[in-house]
Amino acid sequence: MTNIYNFQDLHEMHLYPCAYSVTFNVSGNVLNAILHQRSNDVAVANNWNVVQYAVLVHMFAQVSGLKVGELVHVIADAHIYDRHIPVVEKMLNSEEHPAPQFIMNKDVKNFYDFKVEDFALIGYEYNKIDEKFEVAV
Picture 1 (cartoon, rainbow, N blue to C red):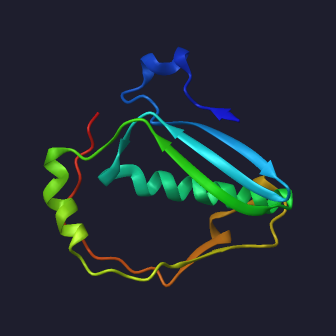
Picture 2: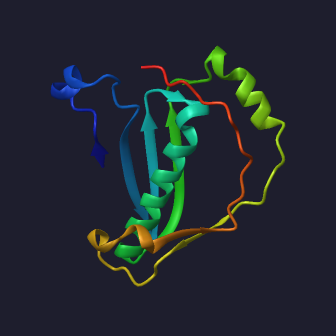
């Protein structure tokens, strides 16, 4: 179980931690995780949060000799800001692409030995969006 919501450090932050806790659970030979998030700017950060914690579950499972199970994402306040709606609508009306294949170096057995080069997305396609999402701080 992790908790990155350090009350003694909040006064130094411009934005409090959104994703703040992960609970890992082993069921048989399967590693599952529950990510708790107090706030989620869906257009700006949801994809980043889901991907980074999904990869983390894969990494932990591999170095522990376990199979990857579920990542459950619990969000207390998921929102899309009014100023983001036009870009979100553009994204929703864009061409769909097949999901890419996530590849991770199977030879890594120690968590701290992972390097950027140990990860790849094969067949990743996207629709170019010129607009920028302004992050609320």
